[in-house]
Length: 405
Ligand SMILES: Nc1ncnc2c1ncn2[C@@H]1O[C@H](COP(=O)(O)OP(=O)(O)OP(=O)(O)O)[C@@H](O)[C@H]1O
Ligand SMILES: [Mg+2]
Image 1 (cartoon, rainbow, N blue to C red):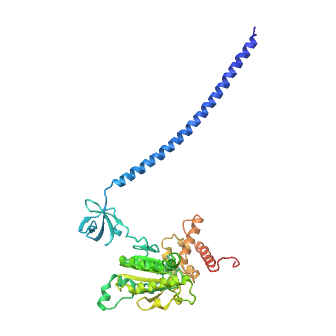
Image 2 (image 1 turned 120 degrees about the vertical axis):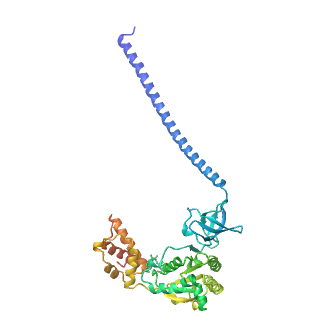
């Protein structure tokens, strides 16, 4: 017969077995709970994915269901909210213009989308783009103005006369019986504002601004240079009034070299096409060609003949007054520490700096202030910026600063 003591031990054993069973069961349940939790997360993310897909499909469905818009051309604005448009099928209509449409874009000849029922203008479309014309940048109305240009009043004056006036008032030239120059050439050192000036004229005249970089015509689009030149001129005519700006003209327009590699022949063909395109378009007042170069001295004289780039406009390095103007332009929106700001020092230090470098100095000075967690710019920031920009110039000139410090 088991003693009382033995009885107790058995009870304890049973109890221990129960506990260990319960423990392992709990662990099992916990594992299961964790697995289910994970599964729930997976299912939840799958649900979100499907929800997104559903939304996309719904959106696409709605888009496909919306009635078509008519394409048309804006003839003119009658007042703020009404316009004369020409539908692509022919007749002209007087229609309302949706308030959502940007007024700036409502220019005669703009491509517009018209509501199917009311013909109201609901959208202004981008001008048709020739996909083959990949070598050019087109801007409808560049935002740069003459006020953004410092120290070039003489050049601005000249450009206004030979580029702006014929575009804005062609009748003046007709009345007197002279044809305005077709092409002008802006020449001057790098960073003096040639591109800036070309953009500003386009802004002021509301002309389409087309920029082609001559070096790209022959380097990036090998074998296509001549065709691209022809197409760019055609595009400029179709989208007139326009300003066709050919930057880095020397890349295709330098004097012929004796040795003719195949690359040279390509450049040659492109140049020939440029010359014939310039000769070819009759001198209507509404396409102006502006060329720019740092090296007028190496240009082929054929480029400068009458009827081509026959007006040379010098864009000189900025003198003292010019630099002050340029600083004022780029400091316009900067928060300066007025109490110690000293323009004279900036002018003195910037001797020999181009407009582009002055702009960089202002930006760098601002960056120094930001790095030091200040909200105004100190003279010391400018001093550091001068050093930085000067060092960068050395890198450009010599490839590296090594050995120069
Ligand atoms: N005369 C200036 N007045 C104000 N800002 C200027 C002037 N010149 C240059 N800048 C600033 O420098 C930037 C670059 O100048 P821009 O591209 O017009 O020079 P560029 O003469 O065309 O140079 P590059 O010969 O290298 O093409 C301008 O966008 C402008 O911010
Ligand atoms: Mg330029």
